[in-house]
Image (cartoon, rainbow, N blue to C red; front, side):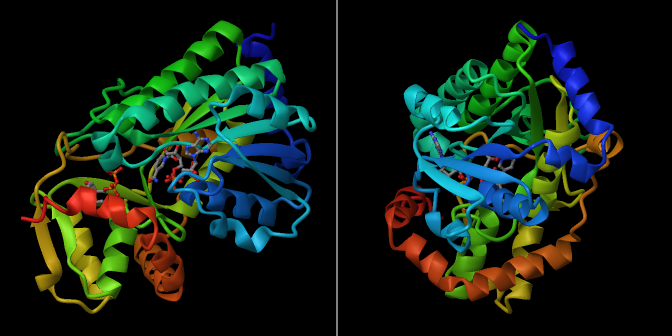
Length: 364
Ligand code: NAD
Ligand code: TYD
């Protein structure tokens, strides 16, 4: 059985080559959850920037998985889609047996805090059990590299001061973040026990194109485009650090290539904003009045503040967030403006039922 050191030596060997050379060594990767928000941006970015790379996308197509997000790749012979569950052992074994795989990047997850409060079952099943089944399949297939896409929410909540570093103890506060933290601990245990060649990334709140309109930014933009009110939880004082999805994807790319086995890398956008400030910015950019703000009952257990220290990723991986928030937000608004059909199709499906359940009784 290979130990963590052997795996690290191989990564160091990869790292001593140039970036292009590094990726020449990766011909075929499996991405899970590639039909979701971040996964679809990652698949598109990697295929555009690495001409020799093929990607197999495994996705269960839950309410958040949308084949339309990668419709532009149909006919691309470097892209293949396999519908299935990361928790389905024989399905994953079959996909990994199709051809040798250089790396697996696990985006697949239930990702919305509010849904985890309504029903944590799918979060435990996919985020924890799914990660375990996927890692065991990778071990059987001797996949040489595994990247677990995690979140800063595993660190819990900050007060007015301080930042999350990779050394901050895990203290998750929601069923969602608890399930992500449990998965991170399983990854850690697999690295330590089996020399499993895994790297973990933890990122702050993403925004950008293709985000499902249940998260704050796309929900508020799509409501405002229809002159509908925006539901601000509590007083709107909660602070999030916003990062453009492509900066996150470039961070995952860097960690996949240069991250050391067993290490965690934080990514953030250095853009901390109270929700109410972000809400008023969106209103202004969309030319709407503050009469559209609705303060609603707060989310139970609502984390006050997230803020990331991402110096380790900057120093070790040579990564930096590149997208200025003002520019990224305007571009995101423009994307939703020109993709109103995309939003409408989502909203006419299951999303409407969920929307009713979530907000029906909460409007203050
Ligand atoms: P998303 O909800 O938009 O997409 C999740 C995708 O996973 C969907 O395509 C869904 O169909 C798929 N999926 C769900 N369960 C599955 C299963 N059992 N088997 C196979 N596929 C399954 O999520 P996202 O916002 O793109 O987040 C992707 C990852 O990044 C998640 O692991 C999330 O925890 C993490 N993350 C997200 C953010 C953020 O701001 N959105 C920040 C940090 C980390
Ligand atoms: P969200 O986009 O759900 O991301 P997360 O909970 O993972 O940080 O929420 C971002 C912030 O916006 C969070 O503080 C909760 C708040 N929020 C609202 O005020 N209203 C809403 O309708 C939503 C979805 C979120």
